[in-house]
Length: 502
Figure (cartoon, rainbow, N blue to C red):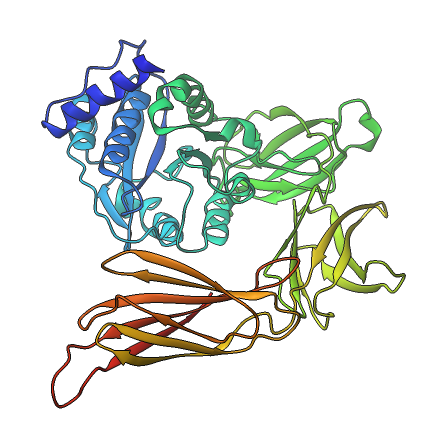
């Protein structure tokens, strides 16, 4: 741990002094590899300068064994910021030396973390001829993130994967596992990595090998493998005018159950679905052309073990008469979800039907201050069902004070008063955070609805919060900011107030 801390400190000092980072360890050169590799670089203000520099160093360590050029690997960088920005196109730096200099010279843009916009920009601009991308080579996207995005990434990421782009994700923060797992290519255990920014070198070789496998996939191969589907990709051999593909597939142990599809010559990918879990499928692609002869291509793909839903049920946004229910994961094999809920104790149960494509709903028209048993049941397309339960508690209605008011009582004193909260209140807790000076907390009986706050002279301000206290839990706080204006003979002692409910 000490050695790691010293290493990180040394790197930080070199970066602060503008010195170059150490040369990466020599690696065997990787040639005979052709593809376009897009680096999605989080350049927003949510990333520190130190983290940004570490990620740049990691990117070069990852890339430097590759051979770059029009017949080899080409690389481009997109910045994630308020507006997506291309650092350089695919065909600008075609040697290791020039690419390394370009990565070192990349500067952080700051701004918002609009990853969804950057992904849409990548689809529209970067993986196109105008940015130097080549039409008939494998496409790989590497997204290094701190796990946070200000906008939606699911739709633009899926559009990229539909184009045949293989997606690798490295999260240097905690991140949302379910969101990132869905965004990465499948299986996620080889395409998604969680690692501290100082430990990025640990995954360099494994990630490089994965990218290498994707870039060398110039033959029929499968990606996005699940328990019931996988996507087939193959090089562009035909066009819509020169022929079509015959695709044969079926379980290797059951030759009699093989199926045959005809696919347009314009296609280079196809999703096979409704497959059996944990089954090895043999796939043969036969290009049918009257112009050229292309030999058949074949591959074997084993589907994953059947996933189960739900494995997690979460209750959030609880109010007096409603709460939010969500669950995970969401699977294609699930036709619908049933949400059953009823008060405890009791045998009164109500049911909500939710489409299988969704993973949340709001339960409404509930009783305040009541414990509910919530059961989420997944109804699979096969007819099987699986259930998982959780308890949810609604809040006590009116569990907050209202109409918090202030009255100047002298040069340095303000009276805070409020209307009583509903229910069996045991007392009130009044917290005063002075922007200059000490903070104080007062506890008063339920019959008392005002207190005097001292040490608030003119030209000062304070944050005052009043919170009711109940036997089982505290209520919601009502907070206001008091801004004491400078005193004059004409206006006396005046103040302005700002509300906030918490």
